[in-house]
Image 1 (tube, rainbow, N blue to C red):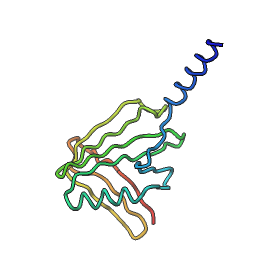
Image 2 (image 1 turned 45 degrees about the vertical axis):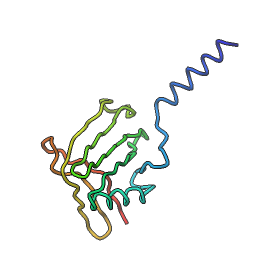
Image 3 (image 1 turned 135 degrees about the vertical axis):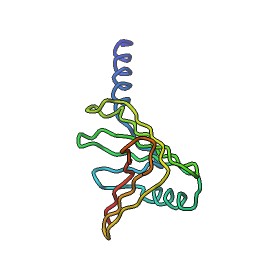
Image 4 (image 1 turned 135 degrees about the horizontal axis):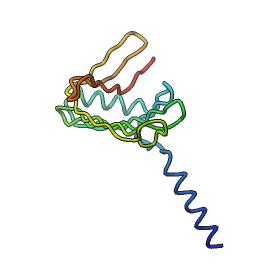
Length: 132
């Protein structure tokens, strides 16, 4: 009986460690459908007012694996950290860049939010693409 309990416990730990359950404050992008957009808009407003803030965006791959994107704004710059550790088809690592500005490219129905002026050449992390 003890052996069965240990096997079930081990199985539960392995299965739960593979995915990610978004927190209520996370901004979730599932294949273009964005939830908790209010948190993202609050972040954008705080950035415009030079107020410190941070967000986590959870993007899902085509296979359903989460990629976590933590963005911290300290009133002057953005620290962008992408975590690929839960994506089985990636290198599994993390990537961190520091950027000076947020750029909003947009047409009437689509806005692209990305970080620019980053400390790594050709790096412009996209935060979200919002289609209205």
